[in-house]
Image (cartoon, rainbow, N blue to C red):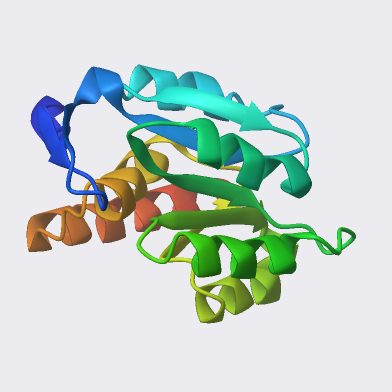
Amino acid sequence: MPSDWLPTKFILPSKDVVSAAQLHLLVVQEDDPLGLCEALHSFGFSVQTVRHGETALDCLAQMKHIAGVLLEVRARTADDRPLLSALRHHYPQMPIMTMAHRQDIDLLRASIGLGAQEYLMTPIHEEILKIKCAKVFFHQTRADSDQYMEVRIDRIDSTTTD
């Protein structure tokens, strides 16, 4: 993928025009064993992390220039689905991407029905994360980006099954 995948200016749902350095993502997850926040920082995001859903709405109310929310969904936690519904209710235009382990694919699919735009399966591959961030948070829908993602997913799947 070209290194210029990240635009220099963005128009957020609030209609604010901001630079890449001003973009903030809220990441709701228990921990970060996969280096997700480090990867998001390398893409140009400022990242705020909260561990529990109940603090996410309070945090969003205080953040400016929010590009979106990355929400970990877990089968054992009951507050993920109500949080997703609350995010949709209070911030209907907010881009939301969910993530979960591969075995929780049904939760991820259900999250799309509850208002998430996209999902990630863990373990997360950095190239797929970059492409999906471009799609969800920057509204890039170029056909070549989608084709690139399909090729990379095939390549990654073939290396993980060998």
